[in-house]
Amino acid sequence: MNDIDRSQLLDLARKSIEYYLDYNKKIILKNPDNPAFKEDRAVFVTLHKDGNLRGCIGHMHAQMSLDKAVIEMATASAFEDPRFPPVQKEELAKIEIEISVLSPMERITDYKKIRMGIDGVWIKKGFRSGVYLPQVAIETGWDRETFLRSLCSSKAGLSADAYKDPDTEIYIYQVEKFSE
Image 1 (cartoon, rainbow, N blue to C red):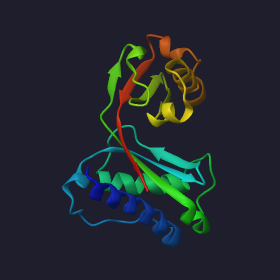
Image 2 (cartoon, rainbow, N blue to C red; image 1 turned 90 degrees about the vertical axis):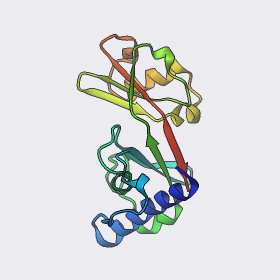
Image 3 (cartoon, rainbow, N blue to C red; image 1 turned 45 degrees about the vertical axis):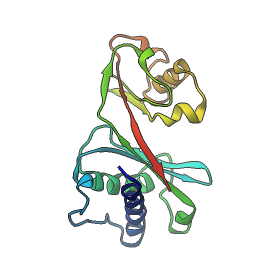
């Protein structure tokens, strides 16, 4: 993706939130001119306000075209993240939008192969799972074990050392991240 693509996607995310605030429904796009936006991609949209997390929702696997995924995840991050109240019109100007486009998942069997700050991690055991984007390692300064212990216990609801269990599935992926 080039800078123009990134700028268009960030603009689309912001317009999606604005449209939902104005009309209480999601914006519908005609066919995009950009062929890259037609590719099915997994996307997370993260909102920050005054430097603090304000919402973050995404899909781990590609389920729709990139443009539709940005619309869906931007509105979900603004209005459906259960950790936060819905975004209000008066705060939108203070919100910074970040988009993370994910590569396909790769299952690994050795957690020591996780590259901190480069690989995002999705951990899964039974019906429980949790995910951290690669930037979590950078933002927190955690080492690999602290990162995995938090992912298991805080995000997936598993025991802190579940990442060492051979029945636990570990997937890595990379992210192309850009923000306003």
